[in-house]
Length: 267
Image 1 (cartoon, helix red, strand yellow):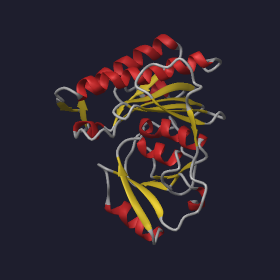
Image 2 (tube, rainbow, N blue to C red; image 1 turned 120 degrees about the vertical axis):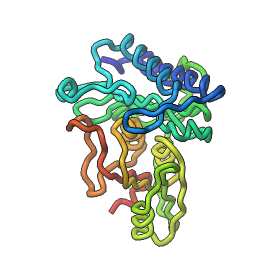
Image 3 (cartoon, helix red, strand yellow; image 1 turned 30 degrees about the vertical axis):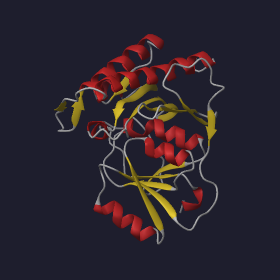
Image 4 (tube, rainbow, N blue to C red; image 1 turned 120 degrees about the horizontal axis):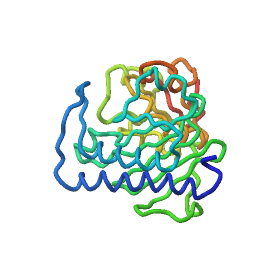
């Protein structure tokens, strides 16, 4: 079993850290931006990080297939996968291009259409988060490979009720629908905008209350954040309060959702 020893988790965390180093090599140099078929941006950092993660995961667990934003697999091949890696080698490419530091490496393991392990690494901030199902969520500040899990700090969502609701929004993908939803549901609120899956980390640490996403995201954008948030005590539900599942259909787009970092905000 992949998580039967601390060493297995450390190896996976090292993959994320090393992918972050690949990204920073480009970030600290010239960034050349190209466009994918869907017109979304891609850089050499996306490619280098993806290659490192895919190669290392294959070496670590050769029998577990991989689905990545930069290594797509057609539906007919993946529709019967019971377990697979789901990765976003550089989540927040727009933030990377804008050099605001708000981008991450996302690695998750999906089992039976649900994330059971997740890593989010923020290379610029040297912040590493991970969660394992039924074992909690953890955080450490590091930019070097790890030898133990003992130095990680356990993180938890906000427990107390508060008058002003801290709402997280996307820095690069805001919308009128989002603004209308927030104004309809909250009288007193503070808006926090940030890029990438760092939104889930802020919720999991108890630094914000809610993250409504009314707009397109892909499964690799949220899977690692999903398990990190839930293991910290939070919830992730569709806008109509249903569970979010993975690899259940041909497209990889998520429904609109609400991520809760304060359960007093759950309807």
